[in-house]
Image (tube, rainbow, N blue to C red):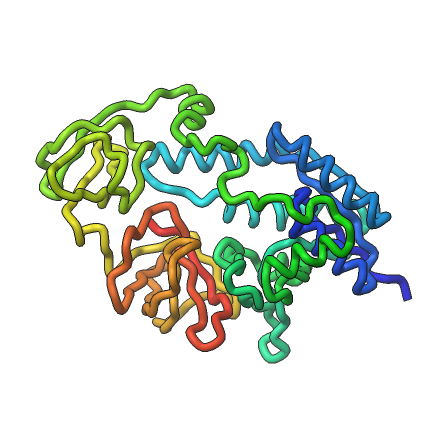
Length: 349
């Protein structure tokens, strides 16, 4: 019987390299596929190419820079300019790594795609739906940025690293295989802003300079001048550029009025939020309130909450305890409180 053909997205890092090796060891016919997303991908391409040569598998490059600019970078810039703090990885995952890549893989004759994400996909025999579950390596679990995957995408995707116990185990496998990327550092920040200077990048990309405006309190009283709304995010205390004699936190950003609202300690906490652009995994649509644990950012601890449907594409999320820095533009992701499988999520409005 002919082995199943899988195209794995290879970034040139240790995770995707080991994932490719695990798939080949499991008997799949593996193709390496590197997506060129921005102009500084040359080193990543060379690293991925060397790994594929070592494993004696095909390596393909596909230029998705135009799509990346339109889908990811335009979105990133527009969200910041609208006073929100986006998570571009979530958008990139859904529309490029698990959509455009899937379409391209099909032209190569691949039955499925694979990635080096730390997560697990399982078919629930009873419901017939694919479920997204946390990786065995809890400290590396990446389900937060994968909550928006559709049933079609989940059904055609493999994530072999979900079964590994730790990142150390991944690096150990890479060393045993003689991969020179075994000690390569993890990419921790936004890939298309290497120096992590968001403000300069947004100004350069959009051609628009930051417009200074007012810091105000909750009642609209002017407290001082800010240097442009894209310099700030909810919950921020340091780097405001103004001293007040006591700690002050960013609690809201109003793009229309070009104001940044500040509040004293305690005001950076919220007990509830509204979210839209919803995606649910174990079921198609939420029709009644449900008890979950939810994360309001990638690094947040899951917190008990109730998710309440509010119209066609909106939910209200009420936390048992107030959460710090609930930030418009970020994702809120819901987990089953018993087994921590992903129920779904949406974008905080």
